[in-house]
Length: 351
Length: 111
Ligand code: SF4
Ligand code: SF4
Image 1 (cartoon, rainbow over the protein chains, first blue to last red):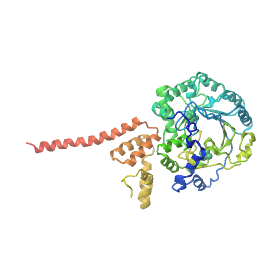
Image 2 (cartoon, rainbow over the protein chains, first blue to last red):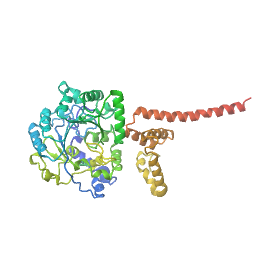
Image 3 (cartoon, helix red, strand yellow):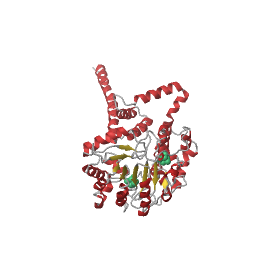
Image 4 (cartoon, helix red, strand yellow):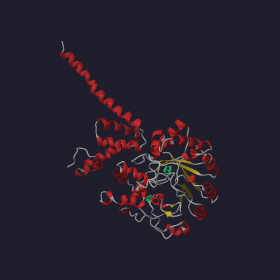
């Protein structure tokens, strides 16, 4: 596994237009597989339009302590895109006035933003109902200065959503790097110790499962049961829900698919698993994604592909929820990842 | 003409068999789908049985399909390999048990 982002390696796939060329070309251009647009047009869902805004997802920076092989953000220690306090101020303004009930902080490792704690403290006061931080777990054990994160999360009643590729060491470390499994286990135990994830606790701790390879996630409920049983039995760990998320063919996962000769098969699998009833609930229909520099996107995936919202309002500084919500969602073939099987979003399955 | 008898890309064309016999094809796929639903056996257990049988019948398509299916279900490689050994053990047992026939015949023919 590389310890550098595609960007630091000057890989062509670090360029979003190259990724889009691949997603729009090949099998789709040759007519072997249908374009996503045509597929949803057949059920009258094109153009895809937002419903009520429920989730504000803010990406506070692409820096991460890990360099996971499947990362759609191409995050890593070498990424310098970090949200400044000025942009955070713009976010807070929006958070205070939004109709959304959920605030979802993501990254990279959001905790690595130097103003992360300040931002959480301010945002927590805005009274948003569900305040999520996506934590990769190992960050909690990465450095002494992060050891008190579980306490900090608890103090601000943060809903912690953490990635955990598998309940076995081998699979976890292969996807996310050596030692990730052990430190994730330790971090989960520490979250449990302050009350996170316990059966009747209000301190929500959910896990995210991404397949560690070129295959789709299986049944979410069955996976959750397996994870619960194994983590309890082997490590006495409790958590609330497991979200099974499909890997989208973007950034490092796209790079992996191509390098391992799995790209075509994977796209076939996604298209084959297309579930029309998932279309109405894809994430972009109730979410706005904000980048570290304040631009607005339909989702975190579009953000990584450089596809800004198709609206007059493109940046936080001009934010207007009503105008923004009246837009067509920008789509491409990566969207098949959201409609495969039971569907996939940052909150797990949708159909 | 393909260079080999087996082409991995043929697996995704499996559904096409219905094109030449709609009725039998769709009956087969209905049956197939039903068999693999959760039942007295879990879908997970069925996947492991399918993997073992795939090896015994030496079908490269089924091996690809049920390795992937196992991964999707979170089945570990240790579980997969054990299931292959179950298939192999039954298959070799089936060969070896015929040794009894050989022994009987040997004894019968010998003075
Ligand atoms: S998947 Fe998450 S933890 Fe892994 S490199 Fe990307 S942002 Fe970091
Ligand atoms: S990738 Fe983004 S835009 Fe496409 S369907 Fe998924 S959430 Fe919507």
